[in-house]
Amino acid sequence: MRQLALLLGFLSSSAMAQQAGTVGGRMVEPEGQALPEPKAANVRVPGVILEPRAVKPDAASLARLEVPQGFNVGMFAQGLGNARLLAVADDGTVYLTRRAEGDVVMLRDTDGDGRAEMQRTVARRPGMHGIAISGRTVYLVAQKDVLKAPILGDGSFGPLELLAGDLPDAGQHSARSIAMGPDGMLYLGVGSTCNACTETSPESASVLRMSSDGKSRTIYASGLRHTIGFDWQPRSGALYGMDHGIDWLGDEQQPEELNRIEMGKSYGWPYIYGMGGENPQDDPPNDLTMADLNQAATGPVLGYTAHAAPMQLAFYRGAMFPRAFQGDAFVTFRGSWNRALPSGYEVARVRFDMSGNPTKFEPFVRGFFQTGSNGPSQSGRPVGLAVARDGALLFTDDINGVIYRVSYAGSDHAGTMLAPPPRRTPEMEMRPKGTALAIARDETRTRTTATLAVTSSSIMANRSIALRQSAYGEDQSPALTWSGLPAGATHLAILMEDPDAQAGNPFVHWVAWNVPANLGGLPEGLPKDLQLADPKGMRQGRTTRGSTGYYGPRPPIGDPPHHYHFQIFALSAPLDLQIGATREQLLAAMAGKVVARGELVGTYAQASPPVKR
Image (cartoon, rainbow, N blue to C red):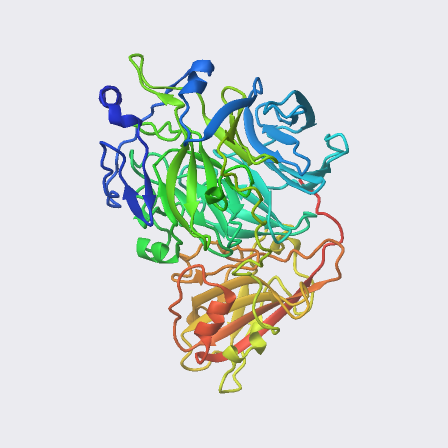
């Protein structure tokens, strides 16, 4: 009955077709509807299921589309089925992924009339979705596979080469995306398996960063429920992405997030959302508080109407639109299902200032959503987005199989393209700073000669570490024991490092602190949580991989044995570090508190790929 009442109320209000966003953390009110303040963390708001009835697009629906003055919307191609994401090659060829059909379609406008006369399937793979083009190479991502292929002279693809086949299980969010960064690395959007839960894979709900040959990858940023659309701002080079908010928190919660995505940062999901909102569905684990999680989370730079479902995002660098559009972003919003007042069903513009900072959302293409005596309806659900070689904006409708083309007919064209984003190194490289192992750093020096004896029931000094403790095996942390604690030692910190991964710059495999010193040891197979229940109060930080907790040896296959240093530091006091801290933050906090130290060194090599059982 509540859903029926909400729907009847919706039909009686002309204001309900309006959209809303936030600017600089403030909610922006649409005409006739004030958006409420975020709900308190302990208030559960009932959700609503309402999907507007789908109607087929026609000449009348095309004429209803609203765009700014001087712009026109036409159909670039039709009859494309489940038309999802777009990419445009340097020669102007348009490529479309279709998830349901599991393929990639090549489209060309051969006579320059703004419509694609040629369509051809050029690749097939179940679950095909993400696509990125760099020169004459295309990169594709399905649910678990990352692939690449050469683009041949006729625009077709050569044989698909598998770069990685072990992405996390998809679960609820199987729409993976991919982009080539200004640093020459591949970036992958990997959604969560659920609405709000504790993930079993640290690579879920993240943006991954992978070498273009697929041989290495790290977790670039975490706590991102489902970031499909992301791109680099042309002026600043910063990475921005739109993240899908949590469902079932109520009509106005959570806002869809525009995030500045930076290496090593967590964006709060599943506990913290929006401008510091706390998710009442999930309790913090192991005596952590929402305040702990809030402190460690990075908030969005702008928010948009809840449940609007952001899809692809692209910055405009083309020459066709007015110069004021250059450096701004466009975002497709597929549309809500979990909101009494439908949101989305449109393409929005995100304005950026000349320094490359976002300032506000504003409508760009809308009119797909209608109200009427038969209830709310929609004639399009925008998904894919790309800028064509001539500067027109292309976007897809995955329900009706249409690619739309937005052109500009005014006289004030930009005339020249905006330069590509500057090549930049990610701001927070997870590799440690400095050339020494932690035990040789100034921060871990002691005033005495006290040395800890570090042993393990499963690792013999300078002998091979067991497969089960490697990332090729079960990734189980080893049992560790220590003795020789001096008086006054209250807690321990642990750092596991591999100096052979990169000369003079160790790979960090484990960061832990506030281990009670009187325990005498740790059991094998500790959880990878930010804070543990047993030992109570033990916290774990981020590895070079970008994950939390122990990350076992994983040297490149065929490398000679790498050396893994399990370094234990006895401290005179517990450390006041926020959850998820890095190795450098831990070292800085330990300075002046180390009263003894010791290490155990094991080796590991992987001659061939492990046999899967």
